[in-house]
Length: 277
Image (tube, rainbow, N blue to C red):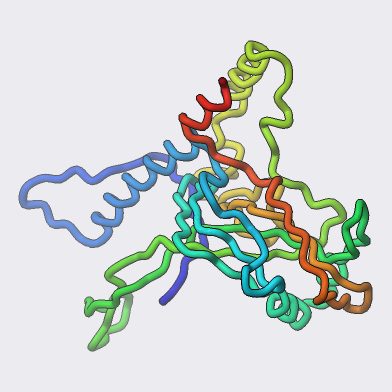
């Protein structure tokens, strides 16, 4: 099974297949048909609903071990409008993750160490992101593609809409959280509506903000690390108790501090009606 982590690139025009009796079609035509409908739905989801958590996906200590993090089942919309559906609890092992970071880049672990304040212990700072992943499944015999001949060639029959949770070290001095529209709102209803209307007119067309140009890759938002996947959604900030050193070591007796409040939420029409009462 292979996994694709890259979000779709920005296209100039949306094109759909024009069918005619007797027309010869190949796999590219059927892929174009799927891409058209998926792209239209993603555009609607992104502009009409937004990006972030729709329901669930709360990050909390695992019931069986405080050294594991559990991401509850739920639904989200990523930054290109794809639905992120997580039907099962996802688990992240803190100690195993930390050992991997030490083996890979101990200097980065040192840069992620932060002196505690406000009642928090000294800690390693990390963020949890959730992303849409496309997985190949159900192999079937198929003609060999490319320049080589082969017998017994197979190709995936299904592409599964899967998810992946990642725990990312934050080595910046003060890594930003996602921008909050609610926090910036002020004044009465008419003033907020006027400000929102102006923002939608002047900077609401995200295609020219989030991409450099046509057929280009998605730009990261403020909450994404430089080497992160720009379409993934932020879920929680984690402070993992640690002791200073070269590199730092984890304090396994102290549970991690989990902050779910910094994420973006996506509200349904029913949610908005309830908030307006």
